Image 1 (cartoon, rainbow, N blue to C red):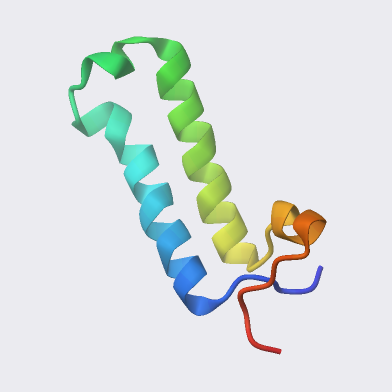
Image 2 (image 1 turned 180 degrees about the vertical axis):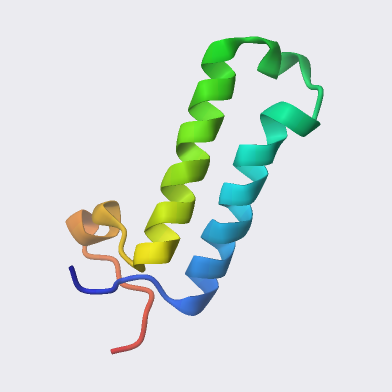
Length: 70
């Protein structure tokens, strides 16, 4: 796997991942009374953190996007 995420993209994904993981438990929004919304938010948060940690996004590779410098 060749890295295809740049620094700014990784920071954005880390912040978004943390927000998505914390939102169902800390927000109190009515949306998260549904277990489906909670599970989706947690899965997306984990995916964001994992792609950031690996510096690789499979969707970026499919679409030929690269935000890191060579």
